[in-house]
Image (cartoon, rainbow, N blue to C red; front, side, top):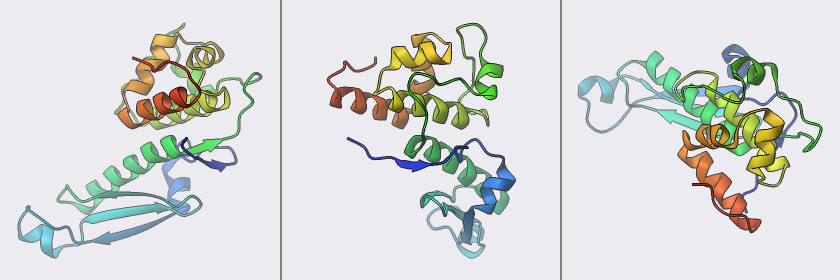
Length: 176
């Protein structure tokens, strides 16, 4: 079964960009491959490492350094949401302000490209892991339907696969 990095709250994917970048090391370099002379001569590629956890993200597909930095930061937030866990109580958990703000009844409308998606995914995964991969119980604690929680997970294939691996390790059926 997958081992997670455990950190104290708040989860790194939930903090604002300025504070997150204070905990990160950014390196810029030249890209390789197709894209012409500019890509091979100008340091537009970006690599970000979250120093407390060692989680890394990279982007080099854009022509501008600022664009690659933005893409790499988003990838870092997504990766942090998947591999870093904060400790939550599996029964007395209360959803965050962000979760309550986004929730509409038992629905959770969120576009996976929205900047709040990694924070919502991290919160859901924290509770799922604390509840030993019980997705239905987690949905109840978070105040959403199981199908809405599964949809949130399904938007990120790696997170969805992670939950299914965890469920299988506990003898539970895979989510569809």
